[in-house]
Image (cartoon, rainbow, N blue to C red):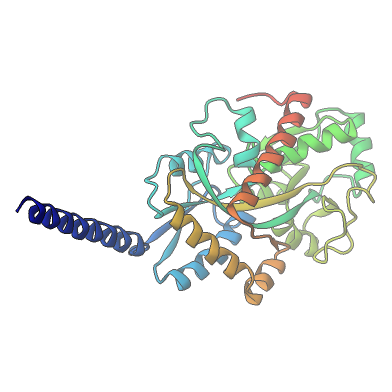
Amino acid sequence: MRFVRSLRFLAASIVTASMLISSSGAIAGAWPNRTIKLVVPFPPGGAADTVARVYADKLSETLKQPVVIENKAGAGTAIAAEAVAGADPDGYTLSLAPAGQLTILPHINKEIRYNPFTSFAPVSNLATVPYVLAASPDTPVSTAKELVAAANKDPGKLTYSSCGPGTLCHLSGELFQSQTGTKLLHVPFKGSAPAVNALLGNVVNLSFDTLTVLAPQIRDGKVKGLLVTSRERSPQLPDVPTAAEAGVSDFVVDSWFGLVAPAGTPADIIERLNAEIVRIGAQPDVRARLEAQGLLVTTSTPEGFLDIIKADYGRWGKLIKDSGVEVF
């Protein structure tokens, strides 16, 4: 009788375990079953917003759930990063992470409440884009050499706008000064749109921003393109020289935009998201849409994206230390 009871208990245990495994699989398989939020740390209109909307549209189709954009600008992208870092790790909050958010801001703002390596789960790199240095219509320079001469004549007088403190727009300006021995005055804004509007309105003399943002203004003759930070000229701006051609050595800046989730997001969700992102990035229409804006699709594995973050974290950290960028 005792043997029979033992068999019954064992059978019941097996059934219970099977039910739990089945239930767990059903729960995991249910993702996603509601709207997914994709946080973008800039206002609408910039390169980050462009990348986010292209991928969000495609993810909505492939995941069969809406993927909605939430623009959350401010504090050099820290506001968005902190919001995502503190969100539930359930796959329903994602973030478009620009390079500056994960590799620059942690070096210069000791008040931020996130860690680039422990607060997020990398999903994939999405796209890269070079930067452009442009001058306002009334600024009396048309080349980088003329700019360097003018800046050396009146150190600290010429101003440059950026899309926010601690962003790659900002650090591009710092790197330019480091490579040319010049002194410019940084004027930060909350996003690319107001930064470029300041340039168009002659409020500032210069601006460092992505090719996506500045190429249309340069092509329309509204501002003057002085150089691009890629190793080769951009098809979007064939008449604008590279930094090397303009006489500024070692000034190569390729910004990237990646996708991250809160740390602790289940591995199967990260794997599913990565697979979908890689599949989307390979689609000809996606590549065409982004390339038309000067962006290059650069999807990766989660591990490959983490390697990129680590490398750029070290690069920009050294520049910040050597150049003495103030912590705020």
